[in-house]
Length: 431
Image 1 (cartoon, rainbow, N blue to C red):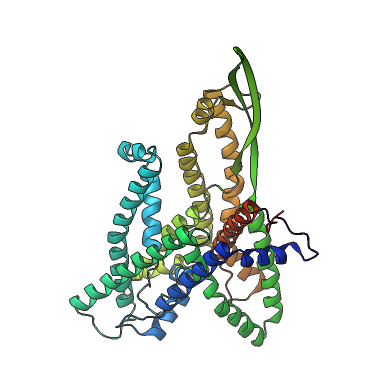
Image 2 (image 1 turned 90 degrees about the vertical axis):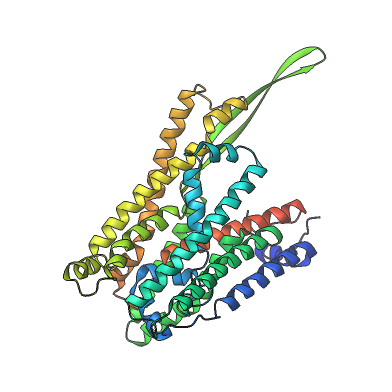
């Protein structure tokens, strides 16, 4: 039953979570899995100069961001160096293929059994993607002179197999969290890597202040807090589309029409992190290719143009995020097939005729919402560039992308705990 107390709502909710045996067990299980993940992130692979590797990641924004997500697993060249990114890539590919391939589309409509088959295909697809990414990482490190000595074919093969096994192991840990813990397991693994990198970011800020940049550091903190508040607002923002349902029932030999009303919540940021991932991968492709040809003047020019501190890079990055946000949102919206679902459930939007008129109305609304969400994502993408120009602090970089992921995962986990507490008639975290 609900407890009456004078304690603050958040503190009381946290105490209620810890006093419930099943919730306490789930939280401890999730924390235990994260400890295993952090342990694996510090088990190194052979053949790499760690000091040179760390310097390389600090100079490359793509690998620097991926290293932040992995909690330093890349800079230590650990057995889980490539993390769960191959699985995320496979999931994105499957999401794009489902509406295109009739067989996959039929599986998606078979309920839980069909979703299990799609997940199995995603797991199988993860293996070659992980092997390809592992080989590409080794080849890139060798081209940058990061490897200590020439690696033989057998050594390279063993390293790639270990990396693939590390990725599959992390995916398994994530699924264990989803099944027995709290929150989405894959997201929690990424969240754990981001949180593990916070102490290093704070350390850089302290060093910047000690080097005569206290004003810039204060401006950075204010800008980071403002961005954090903006991210929370946009992650939770949605528009409610009113929907009414009309049903006919027979009682006592007579027909009665009953009506009910609800709403469809259309999120402003429907695409989530996918546009940022696509855009940054595409923007880093020219510089990554150019790094394989250090002696070519043409490729050196390309490499310099596509650095994260240039206006050209950030302008193209801004435009690509907006384009990918519109593309991915429309793909997701088509998969939802809301007009047909409403018609099958005898639902309608007040003032809008069912069928094509409803589809046109929803398309118009989602495009307007997507413009706001895409603009928000694009600003988040180039925020490190803007922050460095405003404050002049280059030693500390606001990883706005990582902050967006962390906020989204934290809010989703709190909502799941809120639902668990509400089921047991306790007050939750949120109002």
